[in-house]
Length: 314
Ligand SMILES: NC(=O)C1=CN([C@@H]2O[C@H](COP(=O)(O)OP(=O)(O)OC[C@H]3O[C@@H](n4cnc5c(N)ncnc54)[C@H](OP(=O)(O)O)[C@@H]3O)[C@@H](O)[C@H]2O)C=CC1
Ligand SMILES: CC(=O)N[C@@H](CCC(=O)OP(=O)(O)O)C(=O)O
Image 1 (cartoon, rainbow, N blue to C red):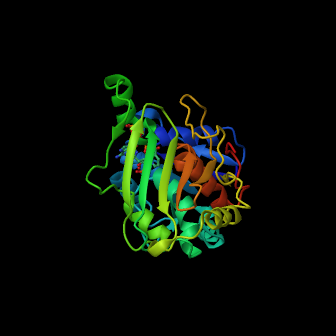
Image 2: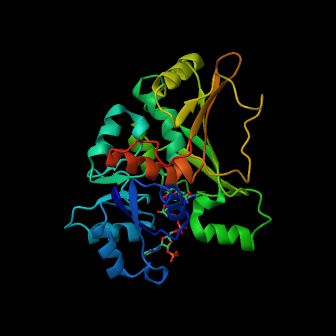
Image 3: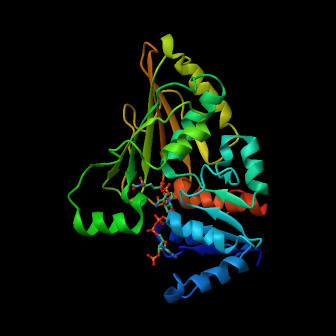
């Protein structure tokens, strides 16, 4: 019993991750369509209206269509796609950004899940910009790698079936990746960062890195101050943690392992040069966990007033 959920796009990569997190729970009831009906618009519309909360795990256009299908209803929506992440009528589903954000999610009808890369970028940068430790007009660069499940069923098939020999696949070479608007808007930046994403031959997992020059005309605070601000900001967030300054599990290296089980945490690191003139801010997460499915379940819990960690792999 409890709250009734429909996952539209439930047979996709993100949808299946969410289903795994929900199907063992007795505080939610999952509505499901027969496999053959999963793209049937009338059946989807019926299920969307029958749900208390619908989670959209669809391409952007299909997500917009699904929202239109319930425009005259009361179903609350969590959209995992990019379609509504900077839309004024939607709450941005990153509860750890601020206390106000968690409250906005709790009371919203429409919640947009963050993108996987923006989750790492915003976790590192938004608290520093809002505290005035990094200027909003700093010329940010974001270097990131993602497991290939980040590209959904199409990229999984391409990598596993057609391109098993590709060790590194840089993309976004037009410098216009679809995640730029939400990075800029939700970090309160003056301009888009330069974003350099790449796919690696692991199914899941990602590292998002933001290098910064300290002091001088760029106006960035000392490494210790940046680290202290992140520690203070995430002191009460069970899913987001901050490693001690300069520390990682393997000294001198930051590792991402392939073949690991999915998880919903997000770990932040600050590495500084000995003379304090440069830092590397780094975020490690599962693109299908805190980067997608885990975040959707966390938002669902917050919206339904359930324990925020229910069903999550902390
Ligand atoms: N993968 C990731 O790490 C992340 C994904 N996202 C976002 O989540 C959303 C889903 O991505 P992902 O799970 O990776 O993608 P997949 O391609 O793996 O799955 C998409 C699902 O949507 C279904 N679908 C597509 N078009 C329609 C339609 N018109 N009507 C009904 N169902 C449709 C597909 O159906 P069928 O099974 O029949 O093909 C499939 O099940 C995307 O917007 C993506 O950008 C966000 C963060 C991270
Ligand atoms: C590896 C890969 O292709 N990743 C996807 C992003 C995955 C994700 O975050 O999905 P959203 O786009 O809905 O946010 C990309 O770069 O387009």
